[in-house]
Length: 262
Image (cartoon, rainbow, N blue to C red; front, side, top):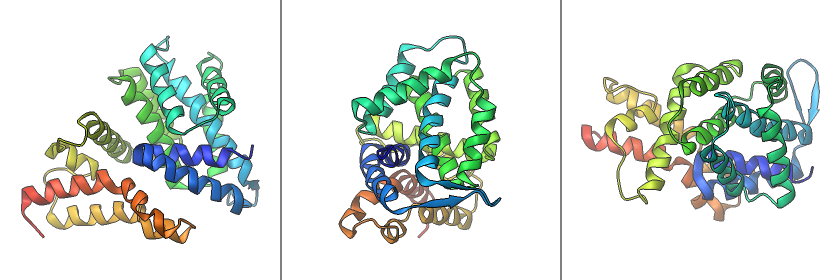
């Protein structure tokens, strides 16, 4: 599946930067297709890059279908949300069919979600950035479909926990995804609330100025355009990479303005 790297790149980009981030992800995924040969699990077992990307792609949509069906039925809004994610990845008709096949497989009563998550974890080899991206796209699908029901929130927490993620990081992911949705729905005309800003940085309103600055710098460092350039991103694309930091920067600026610190 020579296209799988671009597809997975689209997922990662969409999760953190919307359509522009998706385009960036496709570019990075294409370079990943071309350049990365093998990654180790840390236990002496090696998986080819094609296999890693294939498992990530397949599990993304299968788990999405599994969570959607966890209350007994898949709503039209959930189907539309999944379709929007596929569209944002710029998948070809063949690729969309593959994604739908795995979404459908995930809906089946016998889908071995625990086994599949263990397999995914083994392939990602503790790559926390990819784990975060996987959970982000699941969160994005749920939020895009409407309010998150208790059973689905519980299942998403189980997925995150099985992949080694804690509740604090999961809550921060939800805040970031909701902030992105709010910005898109308002056409970028409205600022996020103070509560949204703190949650997006993974903080509470009682955090010190130093803690706010530290959280901001840490999150920005995780998505710094220069690091993407070092991985092969053309210099001309750095403005696109900046889109990935938009929500984090907006949250920080909101808090900074309210607290009036430099």
